[in-house]
Image (cartoon, rainbow, N blue to C red; front, side, top):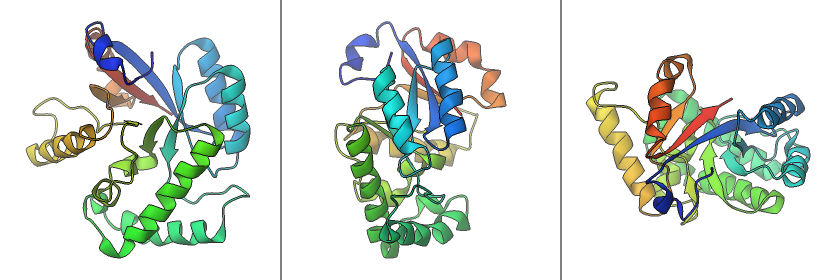
Length: 224
């Protein structure tokens, strides 16, 4: 099941959504994900645009009815042949700020506001051209960056990936409060799942709990 604008009515029974990230990043990434979809282990994908296999991946998704959301990319170069010099240049200007410190994404940088807007909106446009707007997240969770949230660059009413879910005591209180604040801001304009988990080695140990949550909540799981 995918998250939809009617999902609130489905939450009495719950749902488990397994998303594969980096669709279209390379031919190998796309092809391995197709194998997982055919095996029934992945229910939907998050696609990168302006990447080497983006165009082919969109054709595969349409032909096979694969549900594909947008996976914004602002922390790594775009390598498709149709990347304009203006887009490449403006994205490159974001790298020093976003890679300076692991908390750089929580600090609003007014001097980079125009660069963030240009890079994000060009990817929206390309995604709409290839797929049509539906769901949004970003590589390294950069759709949760303060510059993106504060400027309201994510279209209202779209389905957006929330922060990772943690129970009280699993993270520092300040980090939990910060993430919940961001999620509340997102929920005021976008559609979120009830919980989100990344299938790291640590989360695999909690797989039974994650599945039990899906009995009564809409739970998204990220795989790569």
